[in-house]
Image (cartoon, rainbow, N blue to C red; front, side, top):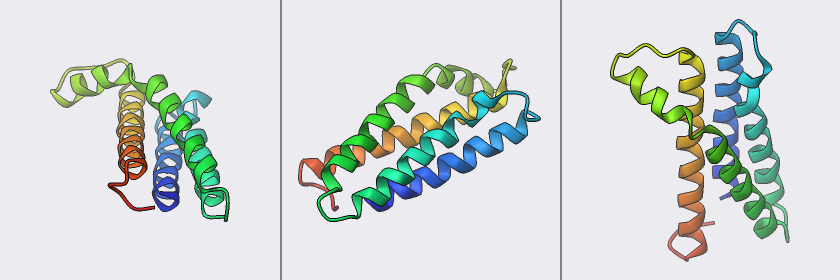
Length: 120
């Protein structure tokens, strides 16, 4: 799970920076996925230390829930964009969609691991 946390964190950092650049650096809110990603990376690093696995992965799950709840509103716009409709902020819709997808992935993997069906 710490490696998954790190991988998701790096992808979110890239997504946030790309969204920020894609919006001509007009709004710092485009960096929100990058801030979430930084949290995932830090918690993934902590999760690899003896005695820190469980608290770090619980923290990463909390970050995933926050990211999911904060980005879920963009999923509708992402689907509209996919089917060819015009949306007001296409870069934001893509960034929010990626964030939702990655947060769900982490939560599902974390749940499976906690239930003994996955690997640490």
